[in-house]
Amino acid sequence: MSDINLALVGCGRISQRHIEAIQANEGIKISVVCDIIEERAKEKARLIGCDYVTHIKDIKGVDVITIATPSGKHPEHSIFAAENCGAPYIVCEKPLSLTVREAVELYKRVKTAGKTLLPVYQNRYNPLVAFTKELIETGKLGKIHQFSCNVFWNRDDDYFNIDWHGTLDLDGGVLYTQASHYVDMLHFFFGEVVEYKGMGGSLRGLEVHDSMSSVMRFENGAVGTLNATVSVYRTNYMTEFTIIGSRGTIRLSGTNLNQIDFWDVEGMERPDMDFKLDHQYGKGHDTMYKYIVDKRWDMFPAYDDVLSGIALMEKLSF
Image (cartoon, rainbow, N blue to C red; front, side, top):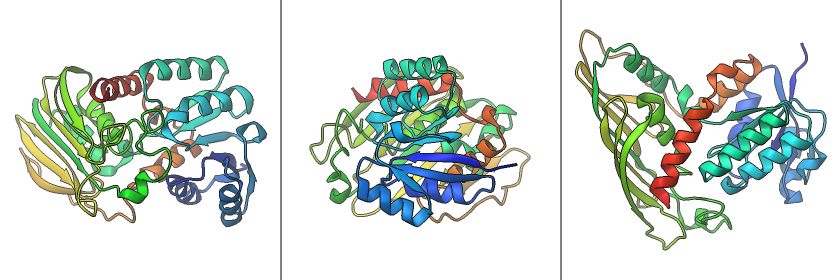
């Protein structure tokens, strides 16, 4: 069977993680990269050993197109790729869009074009996250009644000097960028949110929030908080997710929820599942591309899940 041919659109910060994840899998390869900055596209193509173009319209003959451009451009670029490039699958980095209205239109246009949209929420494939989901679904933690999720990271001035970072139209703020995976995780674990209250601010005077705190209640009765910032002094501090149920309490922590920091679950020993990370993004992208090779489309977030997450981010951010 021949390899899946993929086009990577956007050669910025996150593109390297996609490149590494694709190269970690057999059965898929990058055939062409695309970026409006020709020198950047040319350099990525040289390192990969593939072709390059400077406009999506010039992408032809591929099976999958991955959109890894600035956040606010995701709907525009995904729709254009679906309607003009022939590839049956469009992989779109998080966030899918900055508003529910854009997300609904994006799904509609991609479906009308006869293509499939695959949102990137790779933290669902983190082994500890998947294990926690199983604990909740099988009732091993009992009734979930409280949680705490904290994302305490640093993004320095060099990060925000990149032209689109920190802007209202293209960035959206900390919930859309660094914390969007954790908003998705809340829905993944607990279902729909039914009550919420949030407040945020910007240490740097950005157009968007670089820090946010919120309290919420979910349909399963779980009540808790989400705190996120990219204004930690000098370096990333941690991510942390505590879940308290009637039959157990667990706390995941580490740079990307890669270790069990506390475990007290009725009738269960603490599993030996901690793992080391080579980078802050975790290992989920590798698994995501393996699912693409294996045609496991059921492993990608459903339409309702994605829209619920975007709706919550929109309500808390604007």
